Length: 200
Image (cartoon, rainbow, N blue to C red; front, side, top):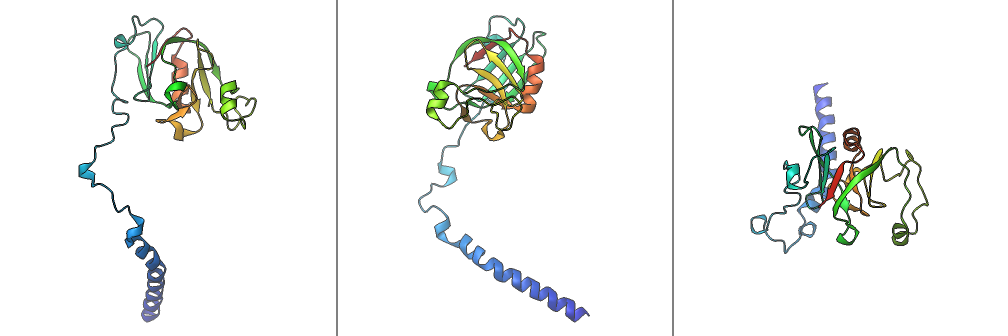
């Protein structure tokens, strides 16, 4: 019986080694790796989002606290929120506009909030991508606004959620600031209409 187990085990190990041999050979092939790549110690480290999760002070961006302040830091791809009690503070990773020409900077405020918002692409979006639908209903699959949206005084600029979590931390929007749905849902409950907003 022991001899039978040993021979079966040996047969299985031999078969596995035979199947793995082409993979091992491919991994050792020099074609799989760049030949002219700089060594890591000689390259400058990538410093994306270096300040993303550094706490900031509202006083560095706003004259008054009022009903709260929201800062969308486009450079570090982070959203900061300060509550009107001067104690509540939240910091979230965000998505930002694809390019500088799609980016609006300055001061605005939240004028409306919506749960499960519907989405209507702007004329510019449809010009860039004619395959976009006329409208996607709130809560529908593929709705790029996620589960919550906060509308600003600037038409077509929002702080909203997203179902596509790959977008967070990247330049991926047509002008809006995107958050993970669980983060935008938390922020939605804190932010009041009239909250000051700065995109910087």
